[in-house]
Length: 224
Ligand code: DX5
Ligand code: ZN
Image (cartoon, rainbow, N blue to C red; front, side, top):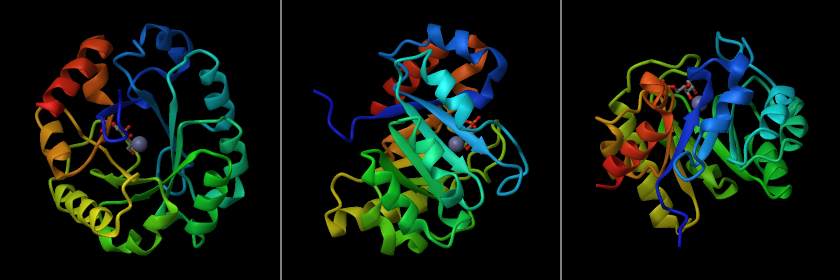
């Protein structure tokens, strides 16, 4: 039986060709790829622009793999309902993107969807301590968001540890820690050791087009 802290690999689809993802996703093995990580970028919160709820809703029809929606958009409160309608596994908002993170997290939770709160590398781990009770997942960015293929920042490991310790101390036993950016076969174990159990993989998952094999290998290395 899977427990809530089993290692989950969330494949970031922006690291591949989005225009053909609807058909390429059919080759993703649901026994290997646990989640599809959907990086929503608005060209304001981050310099890059990707897709919105329409694309997510369409992709959902092509795969049984649950969706992990990462909103890198300003004022998520203005459009959160549209993302909720896509019925994902989780919706994560950025602490830096809104004055009302608790209101947005509560809206997501109320619809029976996991609510995630994310912090950029320059945001201290302590910033979200007071609102962690409103979240089901804390996402520690291990790169500055906006692009796939960047190098993992080692300093994020300390932040993961701090959040893990806070979660344990306060008995938020169901809360998950996710890490996103530059994770590969060489560093996945250190992220897991620090306390992360939901691992985002973009470039490393699509390397040489061997998605299922790469993800399986990463899971073995993370569990070792
Ligand atoms: C960065 C995105 C990440 C990224 C991951 O802004 O949030 O999800 O696509 O890609 P890699 O694993 O290549 O860093
Ligand atoms: Zn992401």
